[in-house]
Image (tube, rainbow, N blue to C red):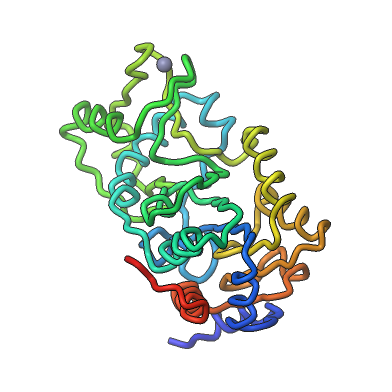
Length: 293
Ligand SMILES: [Zn+2]
């Protein structure tokens, strides 16, 4: 098989600088790191986009459909029930560990992730701003109580003992691809707190806004950072891109390390397309920081 599609996909990226330039930026400290799906692909969680992306048979769930359509919600949970073990079983990779190492070394001003997989925390990072929420939590749309995902998953398992559907494809939001017949055999649980409230994973769906206090916190991080380093995100959605724009308005140095084009390519003084699993350990070596697994 030819690698031509990958090369064509990378062809328009204006590569600037090198790993040494990235290391220099990191060494200055005060770094605000913004991560996306690309940092979790080595953990087996596929990217939405790019050459390794899963081909979705159905569109991502929208907030309006989830809240307004009980059938759509039911089907989402059936798919999510099947997809969750792959998310829950994912292990942080060398990229997550490198970010945690930079934080322990005191070089980070903040860490914002667009991912909902919890892998930065699993690698030991603290004070992670989960811009789009976390699949490890479930919120009741009735009483607003927040539950851990595991007890909800246990209830779902108990209610669906005969439900043996297997996902053919898993999406990065834990939403699996299932056949139509499987979807209708699934039994959903209600909120264990109030008894009847509909449950929603505590993640920001397409068409839903990131909660304002969380956005404000991120802008505050940009306002006090010395640089912004984007890892594994094409910044396709404005929810992350706006922080790069804010950094550029402050004339902060911006680095972007991600495969394929990003919407911040014009703003990045350092722009690399190499794999994070190679770039970050090399940068840490340059800084004399060991990768502690
Ligand atoms: Zn409730």
